[in-house]
Structures are given as C-alpha cells and as structure tokens.
Length: 386
Image (tube, rainbow, N blue to C red):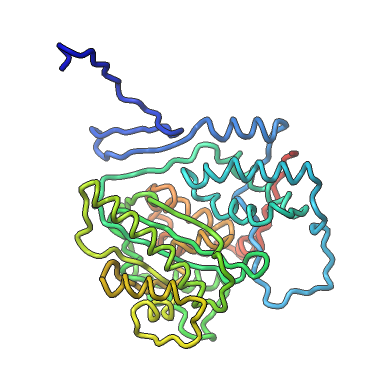
C-alpha cells in the first residue's frame, strides 16, 4: 500500500483523552499506569491562586447521630454569597470529570458537594476548601491495570436518607479480573447478625482484626476499578431494602452494558458476572425467594432484576457491608479507612505486611487517642481562599 498511497505512521503516543499512559509490556511485572499529572496543578492555579493547605481525606467524617440535639447552635448554615456559590460550582465541575476518570478517592465527596451546590451554605464552602486541600496534597494519583482475566464482577451498596429532601445514594464498583479473595470468602466476623452485635466502626474493625485465620498471600495484585459511580437514587425510597435494591438495579444495568461491550471486543463472559449485594432482602426480591408485598414503587426495578436473574445473566452474592468496596462510594468514611481504601481504588498492591485484612477491613488505630481522632476526624487543615 505504501507504494501507491502515502502512508503516515504515527509513533506510539503516551497521551490519550487527557491520560498520560505508562505501559511497559516487557518488564517482569507488566502493567499499565494512567495518570493526569497536569490536571490538578492547572485547576488549582485557576481556583486557588493564593495556594492551598493539605488534608488527609477529601471530606470531614461525621459520626452518625440517631437523635441530633436541635439546641446546639451552628454558624455553618449561613447561605453562601453568589460569588461563593459560583466558586463552589466551579470546583464541582472541575473535579467531577477528574474523579470519574482517574481519582475515585474524591468521587464520593464531589458528589455529596454537588447535591448542595444549588443552595450552598458556609458548611458547603468549608467542604469545598477541604476537597481542594486534599487534591492539592495528592496531585498525581495513578490507576494501575495488570494483566488479568476478563471476568466482570460488581459490588453495590446504598446509603439510606443521606441526601437533602429524603434522598438516598447508590454506589457501585465494577472490577475486571478475578475478584479479591476476601469477597469470595468473607470472614465470619464481618457479618452483623443481630442488633446486639452492631458495634461502632472502630470496634467492628477490631473484631475483624481478631480473626487470624483469614490471611492473604504475601503478594496481592489487582486492577483499579473498571467503573464506579456515586449517584442519588432518583426516587424517594421507603426502606433500606428498597435503597439497596435500587443500587443493585443500577449495578446490574452497568454489568449488562459492559458485558455487551466485552462481547463485541471478543471477550464473552464464560460465566454469569457476580453481583455482590450486602442486603439479603434485596437478593431475595431479585431471586424470587422473598415475596414482595408493599413494593409498588420498585415494581419496575423488581421486574427487570428478576428477569435478568431468571435468565442467569448474573449471579447474586451476599457480601457483608463491612467488607463491601462499594461502601466507599455511598458515604464519607474516617481518615484511616479512607487511607486503607486507596490501594483498592488505585490498583496498587495491598500492604499485607502491616495488616492481614485489605480494604475495606482495616486495622484499628494503635492507641486510644488515634482511635478517638479517627472516629471524630480531628484533622483540621488550613483552608484555601477562593
């Protein structure tokens, strides 16, 4: 062809769609690394020309309070000014693409802030400062992809009534390759079986840490999630089971689309993809082992999931919430759990030498003061001026 038509041969590029691609197929441990080294510095120079502080997590963790005291005054409910509102919207718009494309560690915080951007308050302004402080101190994260099988699997989770106007959040994490061993064989302590065993976050992690029989190989490699989303459920759900079922519906739709994509690329699934759900009632509704009574608001999702389950398009697997990776995408977690989640989000090896449990099972902080700070999030970084 080159004799009759002028052919231009491009040399291999290391950039594509904003990604910087580092691929070394001839190395002893071949992998592909995706990064955006210039995105955050350019954004910060535009939104924070005076500089930013640092933060260990993108959002401040607030322990759940069943009955908040309305008599406690707060100064953070003051509405933001029009200029501050515009600045918050610019922060959300700039980071949403970045979070979905590369740094999943800020996706939950960005989506939570976006749900308040129409009527922001001073608290939301402080949250935007905290978010920029975090990305300023973590300017160049990477997503690592290793050679693996082409098996799809998905974890879903929901956060009930955690958004304004009775909104709930659906989270989803889709992986490509063999699922981590702790998903297929969860430790028995990770399942809360009664109200008496419902411990605080730190105590639950301590219980999980006390199971020495559950260990991982010395070298644990995995891929960064193929897809993840954190989004508000478009209807007001009436129960936790309905929220979990809506989240499973969203995860099932993603699995269907990705299964068809892989089939068109020449990688059909050899077995139905695994769909991990941490609510047994939602699994029972999908597999027809639970008979619904008051489910008019979820009839459409019920019929769709039941039809796919009957066709064996995917297999439902119960996964305790304490070790569900999708839990990261539905709520703000303490700093030490956020740090423990980073290897899973970025596709880097688990630090198995310091902990026998990978994300999201994390070791409890070593001393009492660290445990107290981990729960109440005493990290108070300097705020960046808008």
